[in-house]
Image (cartoon, rainbow, N blue to C red):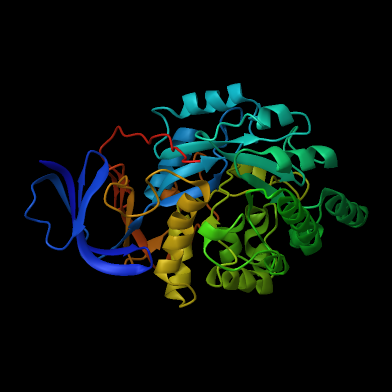
Length: 445
């Protein structure tokens, strides 16, 4: 008796769309083929001709644990991710205390065990004074080393040039960078504070955290990576100009890769008038020309990965003036369906989205046996009804912070089921088969 049989699938996988069934046993995909209904299974899930894709692997989330759990935590935010078709996540180190030691990395893994509702991994953070720790980053457990090359939380801004050079020289795992030039940002901020005080119009956010501030820092990261032959992944590009720093081609052939986040593909500066500080994030949402350039970068394979940068803050925190309102927004529950809007608009193909949200993440980070729908791989799946609209309301938001920037928006697609490690865990926006937990991601390096 097999565990699960998913029938009537329109499978989107490895640049191909095919009608098939998927047979699952012991968490893994046993067979992919036509007419597998001859096999007995404990559960048969009828996909009803809907698209079946590998679950999204989100390589950039801030689940706020430890120390900031009034905003979100590993359990709450990963459950929201599951409902949104994200089956694996990689969590950032800028928490309290920041994840700057191997002991603190172990503590985060311990906190996720039988609490994370999706599969999980954690980054080790860089600072000006932990280079010896970074040299020992465990290749099988640390998904990467996060380097803030721009303003950050606590003791995580790496602005010592010698330390930065040493990190790029010695890192045993991929370096993941937040690229913004702090001196230029501070210079821009000072100019507008002199004019407005702390009540700076939110529309000036992309001018303060400017195109040039992003480009200078991304250029420096790329040059360091070329100098040392470093595996570098530049997070959340926001400008069309930065794309010239990255080459076209398959992710498997690159040392230097780039990412864009769902909100930078969805919003542009025109949305500040309506959304205000709800879409304040670092780096900033920029111009419509930049948004279109980023979509082109995805199409041209200069941008390799689409992620979220999920970063919840409470509603009350977000109501402050420009200087007080924190940067970041909650996204994991609606990230995948927000990207599918570009398919409806005829801009991106579903095959391309699967490549950028699953295949490429698995290849870039050397994730073991995930990110593809292949026999022998873990069965992490999302089923999409392309013709069933989904409206975001305050009542159906699952984040601990209780709000979404997408409230009031009707998406043209729905995630109708999520399969995690071979088990159906969500159907029609309702969590099922409790209790269930994700497993620790492993890396083949």
